[in-house]
Length: 514
RNA sequence: GGGGGUAUCGUCUAGCCUGGCCAAGGAUACCGCCCUCUCAAGGCGGAGACACGGGUUCAAAUCCCGUUACCCCUACCA
Image (cartoon, rainbow, N blue to C red; front, side, top):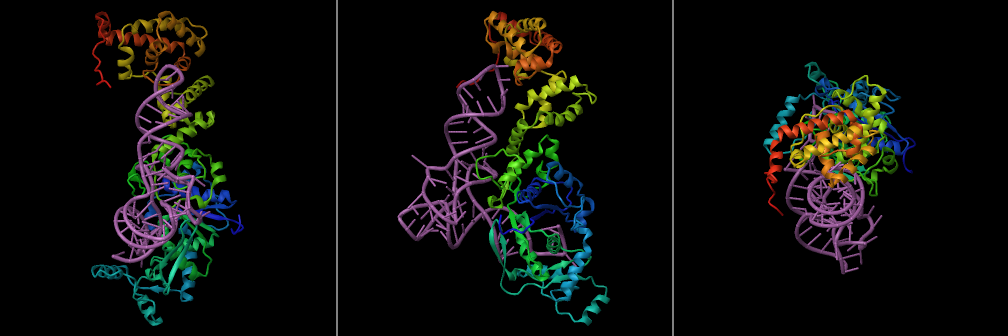
């Protein structure tokens, strides 16, 4: 890499909203990847200068989600670092000092206009169809006027002296040079009258004082960047490089928010998503590795990452594809880790005692191994393995129609039961052998036996290979469930026997035929 | 209203800078076939897009202009 500073420093700067959503996670990931790729430092900073927002909500969940994803930071509110504190509300002195300096240098000035006065003027302008710009009322106040206004107890905000004519251009690594006419910018407030900084001021001050070299953030900040550039210029600081990444939108193309169902990383975690899948999926939202790979590990992403390969178009996030990717990672993941992740879920459902012994654990682990290839999330593993741990309630209705409502099924299942009772040892191999022999004798196909047995054993029509199911269930449970099925057919489906006797294939509502 | 950004299959994207290799590639989702005791997985196939209109050029998804749509900013929110 050439032309880059000795030490790349990037940051992720969330405000305390109480949760980390997919879009934020992706912004954090892009920063993290950029740092990792270039041997840089990833800094975490909390932007909590908005009193209203910061009050109730917390940063805790955001840090938790980041940590869970594995997007660790070298400097941040919890671990500290040489440029701390990393929470804006603890850096007020800095902002005040910088603002005062600008006032001394004539690049900013105190403003005593009240919010109400400004509101009124803005409203008036709107009625007249004009664009409101702060007229610079307080810009040329004499010392005496200032003292007088101050004496009146007027609130004192600080405004930056706006730019002269011309344009401000934002050099952006993704968008190229974006030009903004300067008459767009008036003397905007940099310090509120309550002594806290305004976002556009605080970011610029912090990014400079924290030595940030590359600002990688959402595109919604692109329009604000010229204002920040104005702050850099006034302060006499060299601005960092900017890269505005396209936004992540909800399925209805609107901005991501809680009301769109699952958008928070924490929710996906609860639903049984793997962190690497979320990382993989969000990376693909606006970035591609340059070849046709889609299932990528973090390491592979680091190796392939570059800002140049980030697209400019907003992306709508699609849970379906993320779920597919999760399945891919679930299959590739180490079985012991998957089991460790599923275990608490099994315990929560009462499928596995919390003090399970080695034998029980080994069995549960084998169940997970058998089931994980056909599901996409951890929670689905639990759903798919329920019948291995507890008796199921009902048989799948469609399965009953297709597999139980056949003449002679009860007898067939009874015979299967006898074979299972006798087979030795009780393994997948030997039971399969015994069942195939039975089919041979009866002159029926494998399916004719396997399907009803599966339904009898699991209540379902789908699942792992039947003989794996049998071995995992164990002899006792198999026999019990086969008995139960025979009873069920005889008691609940007497018409099947009757129909068999009458030689008819009783009333299934036939399809329209192709 | 003003300023800015973006526009390729439903969705995520490759291609665009360095026009021709693009009768536009991959993925997901959907449909079908194969495999198979089922469901998945896997393999194969199908359907599905260059927003619109003008240019420039022998040639445009790629360059230029305009239109439209969507998003962002325009706060003493971040």
